[in-house]
Amino acid sequence: MNTTYPRRSPRPAAARVRATLHALALVLLVGAAAHAQEGAAPTADADRLVRDGNLYYAQGDCALAQYFYQEALKREENHPEALVGKGRALTCQTAYPAAIDAFRQSIAANPQHIPAYVHLALTYQEQFLADPGGHGGRLGDALDILAQAESIAPQDATVQNTRGIVLYQVGDLGAAQQALERAVELATAAGLAERERSTIHVNLGRAYRDQDQLELAQQAFRRAVVLDPTNASAHNNLGNIMYRLGDCAGAEFELSQAVALAPTSLSAVSQLAIVLFECGDVPASIPRFEQALQLDGAVFTPPLFTYLARAYLQQGRVDDAVRRAQQGALLPPESADAHYYLGKAYEARRASGDLENA
Image 1 (tube, rainbow, N blue to C red):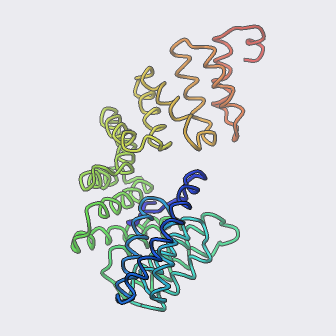
Image 2 (image 1 turned 120 degrees about the horizontal axis):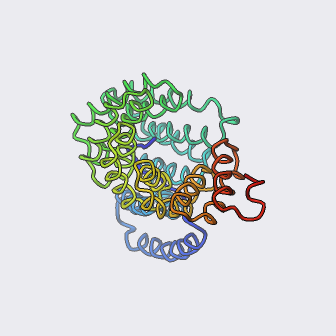
């Protein structure tokens, strides 16, 4: 589920090399600045470095962000924001044990600093998702740390939102719904940024959706779109629900918005393709399926290959249909649909041996 805090992934190798070279230059700049500001207050200097770290974290440069947070900690060893920043940067590099240590140190330095509890809980969840067998108790740890946060700040929307996220992951959808409904109320009362409130509404919508409360889910996702029209996840989820409720035109519009905002989202592109196909616009679905199959993770979604084969069949492109149907049938896990449509493709092509294969 989404959080009200951006989660980052490390950049590709080439980008990391550029970032490293940039970091070397910045090391010199920071060192020079330190000499120039020897008389400056250490806390002010640390705050400036934390802001720099936040900037690079927002840009996805997790390693470079970590460098600035660590520089801040050299000025002020127990700076709570710097410790949280360092933990977030380490989490996005999947260095979970070191991240957990940083968050715990932040809590020890300032037990009232709620972001440390929230990010510690989210890191516990990520560690569980990365290795459920090795870290099966981490969701419980996340709920425990959030209970501590709630005792300190019972009116904090981010605590309730994160609690809802973890409960959703645990599978307690009713409790997740209650926590997220509370988060929505608190976020509105506290005047949280519309972007953050939008994300909380998306999380609430998912809890409704997975309990088959589709009308409530639609309302939550629609509110998320109104609060932040740039939220691709909100458009994507709203489009999915509108399709399930039988509104093809609305679904196509919202999913098109999601794809425009996030053209590399396999979920958004594939859902748009499927909705176009199922709603009868087969020609328009083909380029969307082709686009989806170029995205990371498509190989783990064999039904997309079968869908594209079916679309090709309807357009008389039998050779293309056979090729994609073969891929869909060969990729795990096997499905009866994939083999059925491969047989139909062989029947339509009728090349040597095709009828026997069918």
